[in-house]
Amino acid sequence: MRIKETEYPKGVIVLVHGANEHHRRYDWLVSKWIEAGYHVVLGDLPGQGESTRRRGHIDSFDQYIETIDKWIKRAHEFQLPVFLLGHSMGGLASIRTIMEKRPSLTGVILSSPCIGLVNPPNKGVDLLSKVLNPIVPSLRLNSKLEPNIGTRNPEFHKRDQEDPLMVQKVSVRWYRELLKAMKIANEGARTFHNLPLLVVQGGDDRIVDKQAVISWFNRIPLKEKAYKEWDGFYHEVFNEPDREDVFQTAKSFVELKLELLSRKENQINN
Image 1: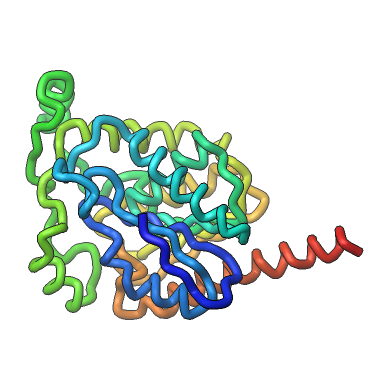
Image 2: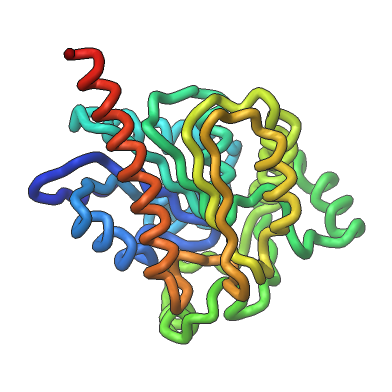
């Protein structure tokens, strides 16, 4: 877990990265939140980045849930409004954390949440994974994601190719747990905890199925929810060349929630 602090904080952002990557890929986003007046709590999820030698493997998706729950609890120690921001698989893990732990949050931002896949493994591979899961769950196979489909940003293309912390292989168990988590998130959409929500989504996402995201979004019965899609953007909207616009949208959402919270507190005090 890493804590990035600002001088005069208005709130805390808990930032959850996606699959096969790590928290350092979010240096720009972290710097923007700090500059805007927010502490940031983040780290590497189990099996990702520097968290463990068993990269690309988990025993259970619950490991992600427990990790994020710890980050949220640490954020609350600042006694400030807390926002959860999860990208891709980190978005799915954030959804599952909210479903299981029902944490106290002022708002949630999901970036291209992994509710469904554009190109899931074929039926043969899926069947093989079912057979291997109870026998050799830690067996790792190539993720087979095409290079450079996460973002159009050439800066990240070169950086990722040279990054030893990027996960190239994932375990059979990891894949089965991902599928199960997506199924639970979709089936539980109508009972999702009522929290202010913003979903930011790439219009040309080649990893996460945006139609699955839209379907999930339309089914969750929240009082405050917003969906914003950027035409032509790939999967990693916070790493795209025009990412400043995405950040400003997220920042506006957070600051509106803080304004409404402040008004409510003033009404109570008066």
